[in-house]
Image (cartoon, rainbow, N blue to C red; front, side, top):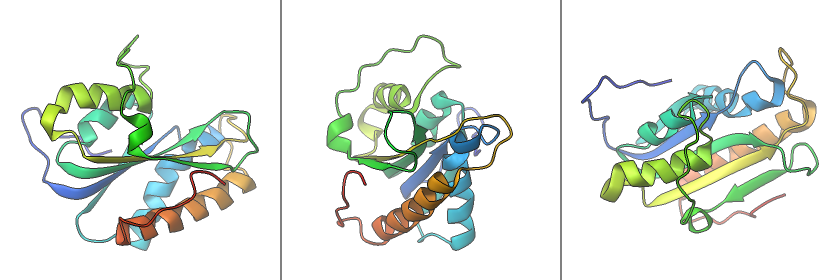
Length: 172
């Protein structure tokens, strides 16, 4: 996780990709694992990768200095494990700001907080990739379905970073 000292403004960048989740809880680690895979594969110049871990509030701070934000996280919606959802910024525009406890902030709450915190510096393009989790057992690896979904998301994100005008299915 990139942590900036107080008063330090991160360098401007075109895009920040933030992987959220807990590496110690099976499929919940898909976001941070994907960040590591993107770092190994290489990303275009102007892209900053951030392991957002489980500290949702840090997601808001990690967006500073970016024009575009891509967030990756696991979800539990009842769909088949490995289902990928791509949620565009337009569907995230009016998320309410409700922060019950600063240590229990989810990515959606972090986006609402980020909009308030950053004001005019809030990124103009935000996309969230969610993958349906199959197992969240402590100490478990990614399930095969989520591992395949992560590989698909890696290709989708790299393609999107190379061509920001490409449109992908919103789920599949």
